[in-house]
Image (cartoon, rainbow, N blue to C red):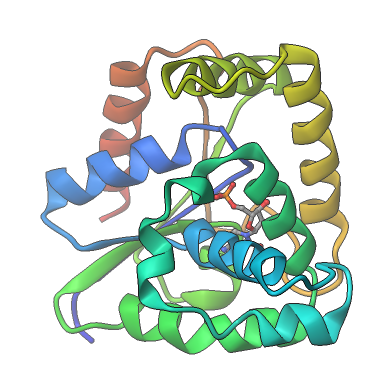
Length: 208
Ligand code: C5P
C-alpha cells in the first residue's frame, strides 16, 4: 500500500488505545486494536477449556469466530491476563501476523496499536509512537475504567496484574515489548487525556 502507516506501541493502560483512536479520527485512517486479537485467543482458549500456557492449546484457540471480538468479556482484566499468556507462543503470533499485516498494508494506510507494531508487524511505518506511563498512573487509569464498567477490582490487584503482564510482555523471546529504534516516546503519566492526544498529533505531524 502507499498510504501512511502509524504504529502505536506501549504497555497496557498506557493510553495507547485512546491515542490510537484519536489519531485515527484526526488523520482519517482505519484503526486496529491488535490487543483485541490476543484477547480473543485468550478467551477462546478458556472457552475451549484449554491451558493458555500450553502451546498447542493456545494455537488451537487462534481459530475463533469474528463475533468473539465484540464480546465485552474481552475487556476484562482476566482476559487481559490470558491474552498475555497465550501471546508468548510463537505459533500464536504467527497465526495472527497475516491479519495484522494486511490491515497495515491496505491501500489507504492504517493505524495499529499493540506491542510489536513498529518492530515486527509494520517496521516500515511512517510514524512510530511508543506510549508509556508509570505503573501507578496506569493502575489508576485502569481502576477508573473498571469502576465505569461496574467491575470491582482493587488498585493493589490491578497493580500486581499490570506488573506481571509488563514482565511477561518485555521478557518473552518472540517479539517482546521494546521501544523501536526510530520510535518517538510519549510519556503520559502527568498528562490529561486531551494533552496526551495533542502531544501525539504533534509528534506524528513532526515525523511526516
Ligand atoms: O493491549 P492489550 O492489553 O489489550 O493486550 C493484551 C495482551 O496481548 C498484552 O498483554 C500482550 O501480551 C498481548 N499483545 C501482544 N502483541 C500485540 C498486542 C497485544 O503480545 N501486538
